[in-house]
Image 1: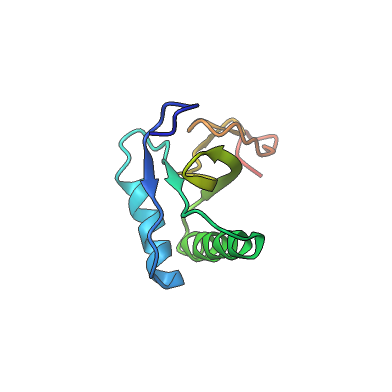
Image 2: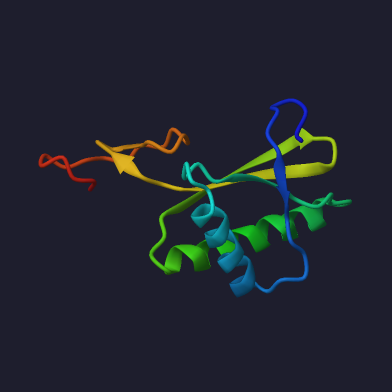
Length: 117
């Protein structure tokens, strides 16, 4: 449980390659009935270089997941939990009238017909 926000976190898997990690991210979104995704607790990084490497792993996996046609988003939060220097909130976007209705607050422009641009 992340104490300051009261949300249970999913531990970040180590020892996976990028393809396996992308499949894991997709599974997280597929298994959430509300489609709000999950809070991922990244392993504690002792150095800034180790932290950068974790972020790079997540970005590569996210790009591979997106390449399957999934519209996934991730927000990285630094310094939000005692057991980790970084948390990741992942979910799959669903836009209605240009706004993601799955809780991330992201907007996309819409064209005159009401479809996302």
